[in-house]
Length: 190
Image (cartoon, rainbow, N blue to C red; front, side, top):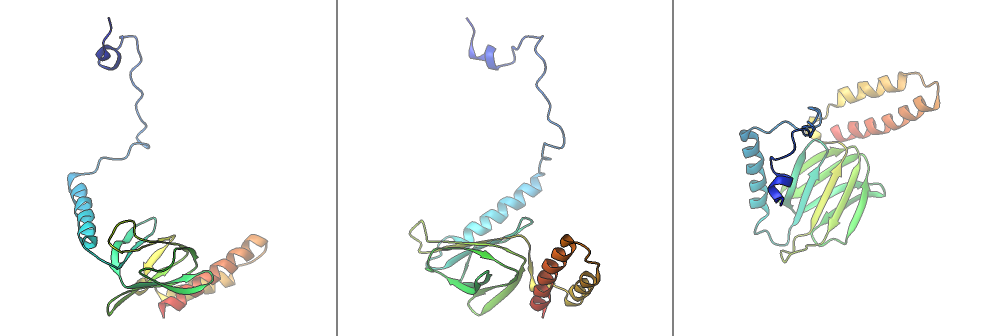
């Protein structure tokens, strides 16, 4: 009789090939314990910040490179929608909106923080628990604090872009789209 160990354990026939090894490019490097501890501490901090909160808007602001906020209780967020700028507060109607280049303003009491977004989406949902806290998740392609924008450098890039040759449709489209984005950066940096 054969047992489960003989099928799945170490009793493979000696003629069987060894298990395939993964290519190093496909295997993520192991995280050091200190990095795992930092990630765990950050998650616990976010969990503590949102636990016990009642009737607030829980905002998540993320880009592919980082999560600026995760379920942070705030009063409101103002975003640049493709149909115009609008403000979302707790108990807003359900909405999914495409965002265009512009400034996102996060308000919490008397405090206000501004971020530049190149484009992205806003997803607003009602609470799934009894907390009364709605969630707003903003997924951005690029997201930076407006204080990190350099107006002079953006103006220089705009000048270079407009001075570049526009011999074909691709160059003209690139110049038009790039100019629109850089003009929004300049406006946000003011």
